[in-house]
Length: 289
Image (cartoon, rainbow, N blue to C red; front, top):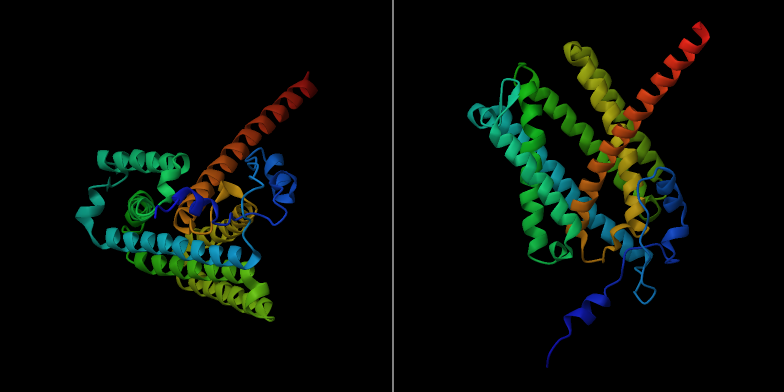
């Protein structure tokens, strides 16, 4: 008997808001104001995932996303201790041709993952997940390890950033699923937040030469956590129209879209700053005349 794979695929629930009207949600309105993303119209014949199915999907997405972050820190540690490997990517302050090739290859992988639906299928999803995680580890790990290798206490900074990342992920996961975990989840969030602040204060007093890195890292983690929560809400409201079994590619799309969104906000902020300066200069010149 022949099995209809298309029929089986269509029967898998889509991760989206229960109303199925993605274009009229508050998340969609916010993304339109940011001129960032317009939600696709879902096929009303599709099965919409239940709340429990969506939560289970997000647990799997966060798990694979955490795997990507852990692989990044593992690559940072390897590059920190392996001088020859690090210098094949970055020599003193200049990137090598291998580093630029890896960057272009990573960008191409990102386009392929976003464009081709076939990357969501097994075993392509596993292959792209492993390869992309490795390429990101080289791309981001090389400059971080190169900068920290110039200091004797560089490895301590890596441990600090790792602890802050673990704390950030824990807070995000608890905040996302707090209605399903414990009634006292707010107290757990408060305790983790206090521990992270206490850790930051200890490092500031013991490693004053790295105070800029410590404070900057803490601010980046706070900003990144809010963006992660925003991205999670978008996915749960139907962004990418992911099926409940597409959590691996969902983690990749989550990471890629977060990165592109940060770059987008940086460009918008830069353009707004330049326009603001030009307006201020024009206004000053008009007053002088």
